[in-house]
Image (tube, rainbow, N blue to C red; front, side, top):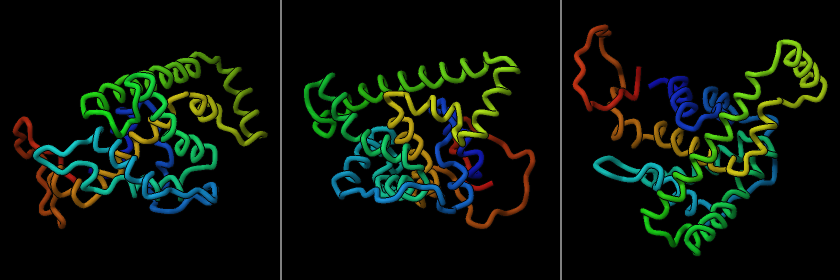
Length: 219
């Protein structure tokens, strides 16, 4: 699976373009990334638990096996702009607040079933908000889009990006995107969850497919 295909898959799964996706493709740091952000060991442990709820260990490794929590911390620190960094970091506390509202306790103390229930609800709210932003943008006339483009040029602010940042659950979109990209670009994700050939062999344009087979990690 090429990184571009992975980004498309993640965008479809989260209903939003992948934040910092261009830096995942290039492998470079964002020169405009915020500075001074840090993650504690407790933060990383929290992110690992969240990621494991999204991609749990079954007959293949889970997100914890891929150390997705550490991956998130690096990506947010190196590739996210300051506003997105703040949203992501505040999301740890926000998720605990949502957990207390629904189950009267912190996220880490929930059962797997409760964690899953909470994340499904938040995920649904995220996608609904993202779709609303897309629909509003698509409904703009050509004249409105031209005017908007001129405003973006002078203010250096992207209309859709600013609108999406207003999503109260934006942090979860980020966490889910990083869980998926972190897992499927990791060694265990590529070699254990996907089929992997380190040095691809001959091209076969008509290879037989058996329903239920894993996708290829390389193409």
